[in-house]
Length: 291
Image (cartoon, rainbow, N blue to C red; front, side, top):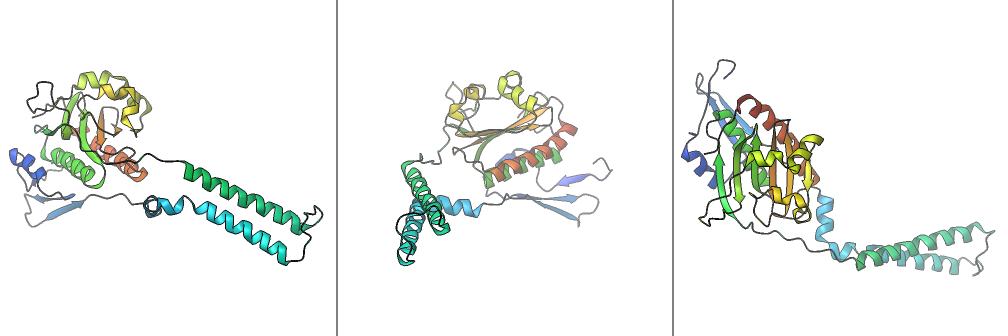
């Protein structure tokens, strides 16, 4: 647009743009140039890598926990067996290098056994995916140009497809430009979602803290944080929240359905998405309103 070549989206940004979200999602979209219809530009969003070792450990918890006990017990019997058949006196002799090595090995074996007993004694609380208690919300600032709307929709589709994200709110320049996913139901009980009061949000300690640090804030277990009261537009049983600053002028609030559901890779990926959104919204957002 700034270079003189007007790009036009394949889909029309009207009520059909919101209905499109309810269809099977893909993290890609296509743009075409009005001056050269045959030129097609495609974009596919990146996906964070999975930690296969961590996944295997979590899926085989019953095997991993007693593993130090097995290793320690086997080491203990191996040392005793070696000492029995080696012809060394059964009484430890500090002047013998073999005795000193055996004592060190016995200490390590016992340490392994004790570590295994500690692992077995810890009973982690099972973490399950919850169904958000709220209403589905699809509010978008359609006064923005097509390129900005496309990027906002791309961010929502990518996050909801790849991570445990079930709610997304983007506030920029004192305006809420997007509220998608599940939201808390209004007190009227008419099935309407609670609107985002951006003025109140940006005056709160949660927003001010994120803006002051300039870095992402991850509330892995939202119920433990008193700042939850400053996010009344999220479903009441939202499990985890990521607060991603968008430069110095906005914030992305990402609600998840699982405690500690956002991985390290997710957090790093969301940081890059925030930088991309900030770069785009800085060009177009000037006190827009949701529709």
